[in-house]
Length: 127
Length: 127
DNA sequence: TTAAGTGTACTATGTTAAACAATACACTTA
DNA sequence: TAAGTGTATTGTTTAACATAGTACACTTAA
Image (cartoon, chains in turn blue, red, yellow, brown):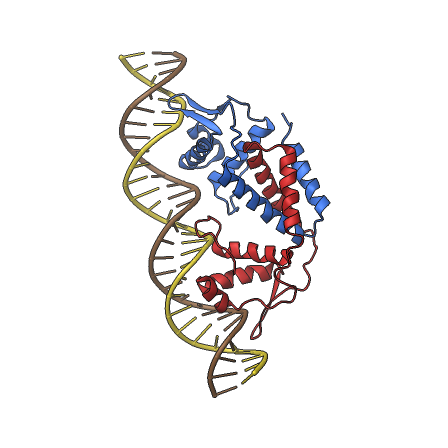
């Protein structure tokens, strides 16, 4: 279902969170679509159900998915466009980290912008 | 010396690594300049010397600084522009994560590009 | 009504990284 | 020689992560 890097320092459950959000933007996961159940996804990925649950909990906290007890988990119909201050600050920090690294890798401004635009394209279609 | 967020999930030593690289790019730390000693910086930041040492070790591994036993630690004269494959991949993943988050925050393509350009400007001068 | 499948909650265990603490050693310089 | 460098080692504590196992309330379909 989702490719996980077990050697990564970012926890499995957060890797899942990222992949889900990415796939929704790409259209691979449709809005309102039913997600695999906790146990099902755990079996598919050979990962502990508790870890999946933690990922789903975080995704619900971010309003990316909606969980309905007894029925299942669904991709949230609308992602809210609130420009949360804290998250904006965190986003800027993340980009800054990336740009510092880019400079140390010898990338020029245009190359950075190019990379960003490529990723923006990737996330457009793909359905 | 460097502002650290103790509540952040990224380890202190990595926060220091980022800040040092950022300050070098900004010109706040000059090339060839002598860095504070491990013990000195530890005292300034009220942080364990081992943590500083870990940060310096990582910075040296990245060839950002050079350490000379008995003399001190210095900002490396040249940052190498090798486009290391692994680091490039990691960089792209980092940016992707940021862009996914940006989309969920309701930012449009132009707004993302703007944010990137602002950060690039920040890192230009500042000396 | 029942059985199977949902999300949820809880306790427990092992692993790992991070941070701290304390000490000692080799080297350089004043 | 003394003070200041980086370096190395050992140990302890804490917290996050992932796993394991069990149990409960709810929904749906047979």
